[in-house]
Image (cartoon, rainbow, N blue to C red):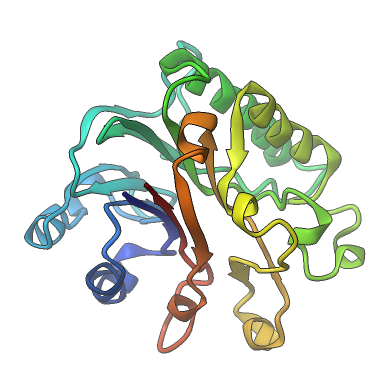
Length: 256
């Protein structure tokens, strides 16, 4: 079973690239973020023609998350399922795919440490943990994949000195991610690449991609029951190349 996550940064703009990538990489499950589409504009028929069922939670020109699956798609939950206040933004969708409960997440950016959006980000991460706990136990097969807008450690930042006092690397954000791990989840890419400085996002400006100035903020998190099945993980840098790419690269994890 091949699970991937990709912030496509506008599915309308990127659809031909996504179709080509699906045909080439053949994921069984793809989590997408920043579709920037309303639900009635989501190209479900296009993906169906490629063999994928789909579920989408969108809000038009902002945010938007989706799950594509060719191994079954059931128990779809849009938004949080913890009984708390629903998120006004379309940032999380969950479904069961071949026995694995998968959430596609687009964590708020945070903007700056003194911005209300940063507090929203911390609250969002805490609610994500409650959402996962409401739907599953740590012993279950659970994957949370997406754009976390958090670089887990300084190894995931091309130059930590340039991000002092900024979002994505603050102790509070990293503590929320660590709390998700303490509940029972693991960073599946790091399981296979414990020391590699490989990134998943590069700013469009100043040639950052070609200069290697990136962040690893797109994560596939899995419980032990999933982690033990993993055989391979990679960040597909090729998808960041060429004409009009997303600023994010897909992250791919294979399960036995």
